[in-house]
Length: 59
Image 1: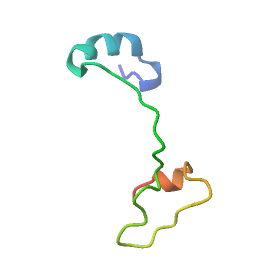
Image 2: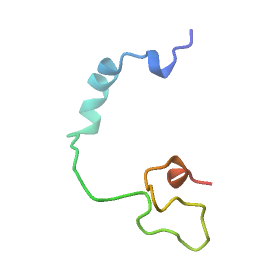
Image 3: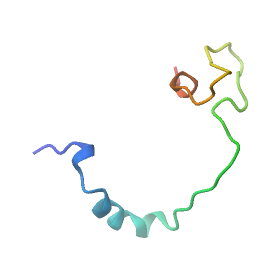
């Protein structure tokens, strides 16, 4: 049958994947999706709130 991603046992998935992934680490940075934007073309971005979905969406 079909299993939705939300219904999968993520712990078991990670258990199988970890030998291939290697160390998984997290780091705090000051990066935002607006870094280096706008590029060559004008974009509809929200400069007041960088974490809005429209600032991450690729068209």
